[in-house]
Amino acid sequence: MALIECRGLTREYKKGDNIIRPLDGLDLDVERGEFVALMGPSGSGKTTLLNLVAGIDSPTRGELTVDGVALGSLSRNKLAAWRAQHVGYVFQLYNLVPVLTAYENVELPLLLHALSRRERHGRVMTALQRVGIADRHDHYPRQLSGGQEQRVAIARAVVTDPTILVGDEPTGDLDASAAEAVMALLGELHDDLGKTIIMVTHDPKTAACAERTLHLEKGRLVREAGAMEGAAV
Amino acid sequence: MRQIPFHYAVRNLGRSPVRLATSLIGASLVVVLVLASGGFVRGMQVTLSENARLHENVMIIGIGSEEGVERSQIDASVAGIAAASVPRLTQRAGVIYASPEIHAALPVRESSESQADLPAVMRGVREVALLVHPEVEIVEGRAPRAGADEVMVGALAATRLGVSQERLAIGRTLWFDDREWTVVGRFRAPRTVMDAEVWIPLTDLQIATNRESSLSCVVVTLGGAKFSDVDLFVKSRLDLEVTAIREHDYYASIGEFYGPIRVMILVTAALIASGGVLGGLNTMYAAFAARVREVGMLQAIGFTRVAIVASLVEESVLASACGAIIGALIGVVLLDGVAVGFSMGAFALTIDAPVMLAGIVVGLGVGVVGAIPPAVRCLRLPIPEALKSF
Image (cartoon, rainbow over all chains, first blue to last red):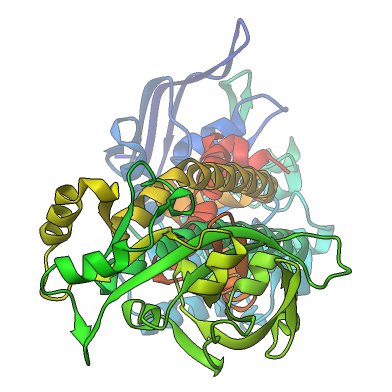
């Protein structure tokens, strides 16, 4: 059984009198431990799919099951608890809290888990070391570069050891070298920890790091490619 | 439900010093306003109800003058007749506690050359008045002597007259009835209307007001007597045309007269405080609107809406609590005890525990009410849209 199963997944929005359908009856399986890149033009539905998988949006129709849990049936609060347990989200603009240090930002999702202060400390330091930024644990986001901020954001996403890691253009706001470093880091997390990663990107070079690249257009899956093929598109 | 850590709320206060200053000033102003209006209402209330709380005094006044002792005219002989007729009135060393008094609102002047009339509340008394009104304590000088053109002034008399305290110092003079009267004593009678009065020997005031054979009232202290004894006396002596009223009830009825004024003051304070709340709302809308993406992130990683609203409200309440403390300090230092004149004399703004509590509660309320709508609005956006906002 696939970790993520989408069947007839549809998301509609009402805009005035028009109905916009960024996702239109999508069928998709993602296996545990896969690294998937979602590509496609603007409005193709890739971020919508990512948000549905991450449990921050709900489908209008169809079924979405993650690790055996039908997300559409969960209440808002249960969905929030599910996210805290199962999802690590890496944002394009990092979304670090400016008034918290790198350490405190990484610690934030752990506050939703029943852990002692000592256990939290251990996990935060491990996560910061893994992303190579432990020496900056007491720095505030304004004292870090974009690449360093994204490393902290990745540490925050993995610190709870989530079932899936989702990234919405995680390198979209970084220069080439920082983007390369971040992708190397995500690759390590996938290879070493076997994390299931789903990532939205516009950049074929970034998509090349994934095992599988899914191309979406008008809310439908139009093509699927392996790593090298995805990079070549 | 897991809460967002408190230090998140604390540190968020430092994000915008201007917003923090606005919140602090707004909350402290609202609290000062509540303390001022509450202190005013409380001060007036206390002044008009304290008199007979400690001492069971009954006023014998002219029939039909229950609403204003200044209008009362009773025969001067009533004091002696009442003292002799009502059994078991308090007495000490042969002195029965029955104080004949004239209450008069008279214009006085600072000197013969002065053209401005100062509105004084005068009470013509004999020595027994100090027994009947034990709240009165001479703190400087002595009681005035009859026939020597002397007066004694209360602690708030200067406020009532609209002059400085120095102007009523011992040895200074006031001008009325075409002659100078020397201040020979100062007294205090805290939280009573007497604190704002000018006391003068009864016979001197009788002459000055051309009412040698009449009084305004006789105040008796019950002691072993009951109110019904005094009541029976006035009802059995119809020829005297007097009635009896407890001193407490008399001032309570005066207090009722000022009820609408107190309500108006409280309503005005509430309206201005509402303005403070609206100002707080505006500030918080702007502050939280700038953090929509951050709030989206908090939701995305699993914090519930309730936890986020609680944190935002916590932040707002923290600012307003600091403002409330500043306002409370300003209130206590600058407002408590400040004298305010009114037609019955003067009273001191009274910022006691209930008023202070009201001020602090309103201050905190500004924080809560000012934060909830902006916080809820901030959360109304779906998470994906919140994450896209700038």
